[in-house]
Image 1: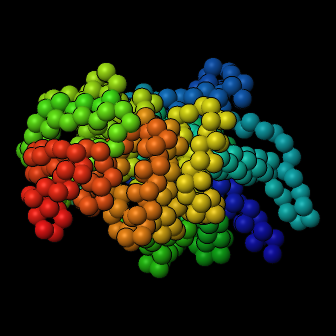
Image 2 (image 1 turned 180 degrees about the vertical axis):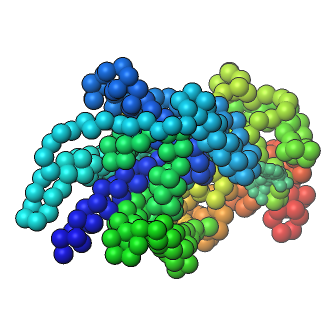
Image 3 (image 1 turned 180 degrees about the horizontal axis):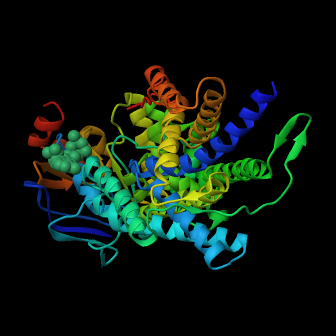
Length: 292
Length: 234
Ligand SMILES: Nc1ncnc2c1ncn2[C@@H]1O[C@H](COP(=O)(O)OP(=O)(O)OP(=O)(O)O)[C@@H](O)[C@H]1O
Ligand SMILES: [Mg+2]
């Protein structure tokens, strides 16, 4: 039983990180119908920013976190404006290929600048694990879960109630009609990328606190998992990304404990395939029906 | 108020609008009628700056809107009820109406206009918490109209508001158009229901394959031989 709960907590830890990253995929998909394959590499950029500011420059943790967020946002907005915006009215496949290209560009530039060797990330919090009966929960795990939940509540409130959030929903449903309402669609799309990348910046920080190895290709794996999480929950649906990320993290961690470490990825993909067979639009996706 | 001057518009190689010119004066109801594919929606979308046109000009209240970014038109006082309603189906009725008032900051004015929309369409008030996608076609048309009115437009353009509605509902919608016009909003009405449109409009233009082929008073065109043959079933 202790093993079960420990694995559950580990699963939630990594699952919430996947969920934070998945939000970026899902929000961008929701608004411009683009799978932003470069999103995983934004994690890598956030991670390098974190290690450089914290270790090389000796900044404080909050300051280096802020730097990671800002740099991720700047990269995200720039990529959107330079690479994706000019292709907005081209066929989807063009922007998809561009996204893959941007991902490779980021990885290879990082390789050139930072080299292939991975850099460690120091332990920031030397705090005793929290104990509940037999259970030990590390401080980083607790922090990750609490921060992620807070961010998700904040995001959901923003999207549901703020004017900018409503504009985002309107643009994601109908670009031209949103323009007729006087919504500045370009700014709304930029804002969406910015929010997704800010979450990725925080996600990057939490990720390297759990897996402290920073390398040019480090973003691929969490990026892929988060993408799967987004599809699992229903791409374009914000609560879906959260649910998908958490489920994926828990499934992965349970497989590692009870089945086999090697099989954990196979199980993850298996779950995705099975879910999509029965619910092609994802767990929270609805086959949309529109009245004419 | 609105002047469309020798407008030409092409989609790729297809020359869709050919030297379209017409005018809408303040306080009028003007109707554009024509068959499928005549170019009616294209004209409205050109005025809303959603599609670029190749030559000609569109002047609203003395200013050319040729280079206006589309999201600024509603600020100038132009609202469009698009063809097929285009309500935001995953948002509630109330949220849809709020989107109509997106650019406005006068919250007192917004609430009084909301009351006014509810007054025109009591059904929307009952259903304000419901998702717009679950409304009936007629209710969606009311919502699309209410949403456009929430911007307090000077010129309201409507693209086939009668499409797919029962005769009673069409009657109801047209009564409301009349009322809205009486309250001071100028109206440009695109219709295939020529009977209704011509009896409502002071003036009308008849379009055929991208050209204006006839213009006159609504009542006149209603009696016109050619128009009767083409659009009113003899
Ligand atoms: N985005 C577009 N791309 C290419 N061709 C278009 C586009 N929009 C309209 N057209 C073409 O332009 C012509 C005029 O279309 P438009 O929608 O303006 O007609 P309409 O008078 O509104 O017709 P309806 O009564 O059926 O709504 C049609 O032949 C149509 O196929
Ligand atoms: Mg049309």
